[in-house]
Length: 560
Image 1 (cartoon, rainbow, N blue to C red):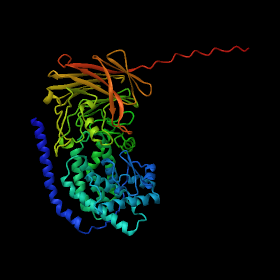
Image 2 (image 1 turned 45 degrees about the horizontal axis):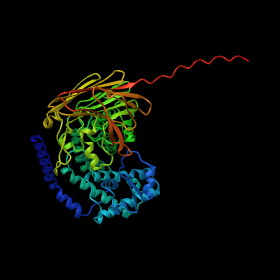
Image 3 (image 1 turned 180 degrees about the vertical axis):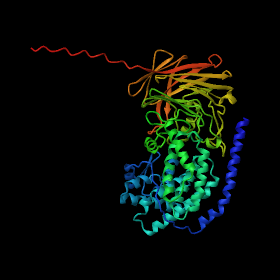
Image 4 (image 1 turned 60 degrees about the vertical axis):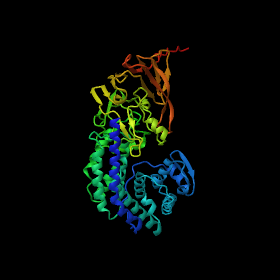
C-alpha cells in the first residue's frame, strides 16, 4: 500500500541521516581507541531506587549466574558460552551489581571486582560479545552506582583500570548519541551520560550538553498528559526510577537541573496510578510485560501529586472507567509514530477489567523474556481483548532492515467520546485492507457491578471475532446456556458474561507473568458475516454472593 511504502521510505531516510551524522564522531572515537585514557575520580555515587535481593548476592558470590531464566555456573561467566541473547545482555549490563552493593560484605566486594575485571579482560582480548548501546549505558550507570563497593579496599592497579574503562565507555556513549534512533534507548543513553557527568570529576561540559539533550528528548517523548509517546505503560516506571536520582545529583554538584526533568516526573507519576489495577499491576498495553510491583511502589513513594488518579489520558489515547472498586482500562488511541513503535501492539479498543484486588479480563501482554515467537504473537490483535476482523491484525509491521518490527500502518483516525462512565470509540485500523471500521461502546454502572459493551463493524461484509482473555487466576466455567459463561475469582466473587450471540470458551496464554507464559482461557464470540450481524452486545455482571441463613438464637437451657 502507498501509505506503508511512504512510512518505510521515511524510516530508511531517517536511519541514513543518523548514520551520516555519526560519521562526525569517528575522529574522536579513534582518539579514544588509540590514545591514552585518563583515570578520572568519581566524586558522587547516585542512589539506586531499585530493590536488591540478598539471595542474588549469595548466588553471585558463589559463582551462580541466573539471568533470563537460565543458570550458568562458571568461575568466569564472560568466558562461558551464553545460553541466549537475553542472558548475555543481562550479564553485560551489570545491573545485578546492586545486589552485591546492598550486601556490602568483603566477599561481595571481592566478587564484584572479580566480575568487573573479567569483563575488562574479555574486552581487552576481543572476547567480549557485542552488545547494544543501551546495554552499555546500563553498565556505565551500574559501575558508577557500585563504585563505592568496587573501589573501597581496591589496589591501585584495579582503580586505574576501572576508571579508564569507565571513562572510555562514557566517551563511546557520547559519540554514539548522534546516530541513535528515537525511542527509550536514546533516553537511557542520555540518562547515563548525565549521571556520569555529575558523578565524575572534570565533566562539566558533558553535563551541560547531555542535560540539554535529555531535556529536549523528555519534552519530545513525554506527552502533556504524562504518557510516553510509545504508549507503553512500563516505560513510565523505569524512567521515573532513573530520573529521580538525577534530581538529587544536580544540587549535590551545585547545578540546576533542567526544568524538563522536574516537569516530566511530575507528569508521569499520576499516569502510573492511572494504569494500575487494584492488585498493583499495570495494564498490559503496547509492550507492557510483567509488572515489578516493588518498583511501582518505590516510584509512587516519591509521588508529590497527592495520589491523584486521572480519569482520562487524551494525548496518550487511554481511558479509565472506575466505580465501586471496579476498574476498566481502555486503549482508544492511534498507533504511535513509526520511530517509536518498535514495541507497539495492535490492540486498539482493547480493555482490561478488574474488581477490587483481582483482575478479570486482560490482554496477553509482552513476554518478560524477549522470545521472538512470543513477541510477534503478542503484538497481534488476537492477543488482545478486542475485535479481530477477517483474522487480520489492525496494524502492519515492517520486515526490512531499517523497518523491522516498526508500525507501517495502523489506526490513525481514532475518535473517542466519553460521558461520565460511558465511552464510545471508533478506529480505522482495518479500513485500508479489509474496508471496515470497528466501533466499541462501554458503559460501567455507578455501582461498578455491571460493564455493558457493544461492538459494531461498519463497511464491507467480513467475519469477525470478539475476544476476552481471562486472567489465569480466574476460573472460567461454561454453562448450559449457549450465550453465557460464569467466572469465579480467587476470593470467591462471581461474575457472569452474557452476549446476544453464541459464546465459546477457548484456550489462551498469559505472557506478562513473573513465572513466564502461562495457559489461561478466553471467551470468544465469532460472527460469520458483519452484513447479517453488524453488532454484538455483551456484558460482565457481578453476581451477589448467597447470604448464609440467619442463626437461630440459642434457646436458654433449663437449670436441671
